[in-house]
Image 1 (tube, protein in one colour):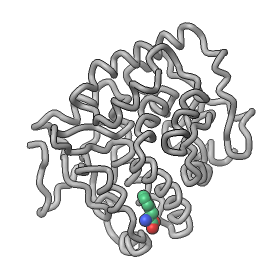
Image 2 (cartoon, helix red, strand yellow; image 1 turned 180 degrees about the vertical axis):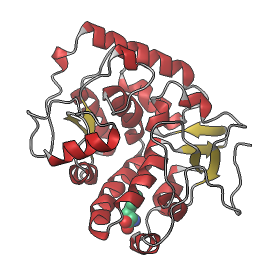
Image 3 (cartoon, helix red, strand yellow; image 1 turned 120 degrees about the vertical axis):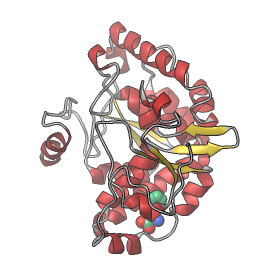
Amino acid sequence: EDFLATVAEKSHGAALRGDYEHADAQYVVQQNWAEYSEAEHDLWRRLYQRQMALLPGRACDEFIDALHKMDAAAGIPEFEKTSAELFATTGWKIVAVPGLIPELTFFEHLANRRFPVTVWLRKPEEFNYIVEPDVFHDFFGHVPMLFNPVFADYMQRYGQGGLKAMKLGGLDQLARLYWYTVEFGLINTPQGMRIYGAGILSSGGEVEYCLTPGTTSRHIHLQIERCLNTLYKIDTYQETYFVIQNFQELFDGTAPDFAPYYERLKSAEPFPANALLPQETELLP
Ligand code: PHE
């Protein structure tokens, strides 16, 4: 499969580890929940407990409230159970996938309110750091936010926007928006700065780091075209966090047609991951 080689090469030069043999045309597989080992359930519980100890006062309320309703503390969850609750709440479903999937397929899932979740769990030695998304990152990090109606709509629109960006040559730009919102987004609430990005929420170290004042990382208000033009780091903590005030702002800010942005940015030099522009203020000094 062409894309597997490409992704593997791009990410870390090794083969992807999932079982792609049994996937259907949309890369969907069975979760085969009964086949997880006791050791895997135990590793999940340790990951879960570590994150839960870090999240109060740091993760946004929307995330924590949904997570408590999801019944994910006892071990690797059965996707079908959560998927039914999710569907009843926001009309989203969870589908099981072997791992990373092609961009087109990923966008098609999102555009149809299906969130692809990797079935396999990391190895114990990857407790602190993992290169590819696993079931803990995908399920623990991403699924809770899909219970929020505005965020859920944003994710669908993102999928539709992805299909459009493929035609307009805007994929690199649109991927940056996903990275800086869905994966590493912060939200400045009346109670203080909070996390909603899945890449932070499922990380052992970045939960504290991203909210610590005085680091070398930026915390700046999300401006869409600026974000589309900003490079990101995949192997260190982020050097920039883009901050929103509420989820409606995210939804409304991304509603305009991105075609003119892509057109302009084609000939623009992207900003480095640690850029701070003259008109920007650090929100966590
Ligand atoms: N409005 C964007 C476009 O025209 C689509 C989009 C919506 C992208 C929401 C991201 C998030 O391409």
